[in-house]
Length: 279
Image (cartoon, rainbow, N blue to C red):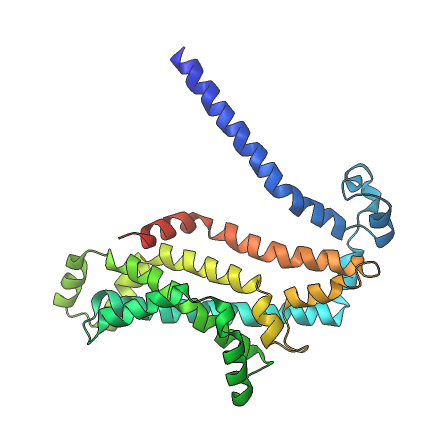
């Protein structure tokens, strides 16, 4: 009887997880089917009619999307904002996290507390002052300006996460490396970075998703030539009745990229976050 109960419990859990997964995937599937239907078919019925009428489905909308200069430019702007921001945040945070964890310098703990305190500062507080500063520096309305803003506001959490992870590396490992003649840079690149790969991967996922899906910062700091896909989609929604054939595939493209990134690195996600968030 205990084996039967265990089997039933496991089956119920699996069934529940399958149901949750289907609920989570349904909006994505609906958006994908909508992106394959014409504007007339979309107006005449819901996306689920594409399952019973496969003749409605085609990739003509994606051809129209590639021919839309605004959407394609916005996509590449999003890539040019998200990728450099993620790389800069990860590199700078890894260097700072190692320094705060294992290097001795004056006021180290005080500076780290200041960095941690910045986590509670809402991004909205800095929008107007930074916009004024960027205007004086000639960065307002440019991709480098958007990247710089995201980097500055992403670093506190990134440094906090990686510092806590690096601090859990056994001291004996670092001391042994120093005794073998390894300098700080060699220890950092050959020992700390490989050991910290799960935390670095989870940080990269976090940062990429935040920046890719951001609209508030881009809406304020990017002009028409540098605006990302989220802002372009928001402007396209105003003409929803006439451009659904471009809006649907654009929205699916905006969604599928971060989903693909998440699943590509998901095995590092939980391990890195849990290990780096507690001492």
